[in-house]
Image 1 (cartoon, rainbow, N blue to C red):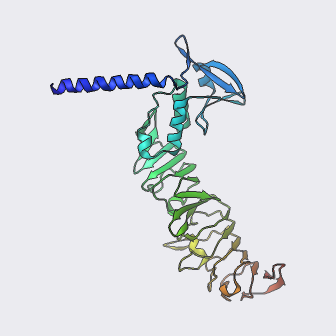
Image 2: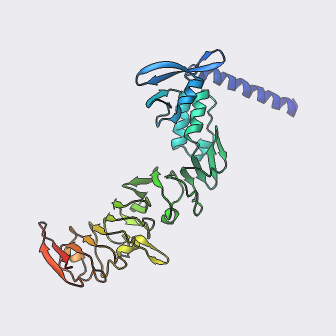
Image 3: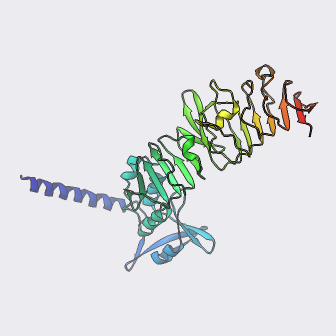
Length: 345
């Protein structure tokens, strides 16, 4: 048998298999009822089902739900149309790896389902060393208007897609510097996680603070160690609670969280700081001239250097031991037994 005949035979077998698979799928997929040449769908509006045409459904189309149902909206009332193939596609698009994405096939979806997927993922870019987008399937290509970036592998180029509103990390590497100047909300999948606006990475040594949402004004964080400059992008931060000063390694200066190679950049908006554990080294708050209130209640008094607050003049300090403060302060005893220093105006 010649090469040409072999290719023809292979193609014929493949075609037969595809036809057989398509026939089998009709037993399970909710294909629409045919009305003439137009599809018809069973739409559920709050428990009430009704059949609507493609034209009617398309005019009401919003996209898809998180569960993968086709989402409609009519006069403020939400409705859904079920499509098994759309559900499977949504699961892949929302959680899949690059391999799962590029092998995604939505050929079994209804016409309305395919339109719903296009509507729902039109503003998403998947990045894995290069950009990908959904166009009836995953294709290479940029989407300048993307509102969501999904990082699958590698690192994001500097200043990538500044108009994005959401950065989802499913893989690859993210650093604090990637988020400077951005206005994104963070989402993540293991080994990354997002807790209280902070991006954490699970490591053998514990939870590592990588970064935080740049628009945060208040953060209350728990982690085991932090990257230098992990909060460098948070230039609107007003209140901050952390498990210890510094990064959890050798450097115990509080401002290390806002550092880069050019120095410390504690935001001028930061007014209130609470530290729940660890040690306070000498001049711990160097580089924090605008901080007005510092609460270190709960620390071991022996872990606080007497000159930990040297170089700053906060309005209030709540501490379990007496410390040296520049200027005139009134001292009172808090119910917890700590000394509260209040600066005299």
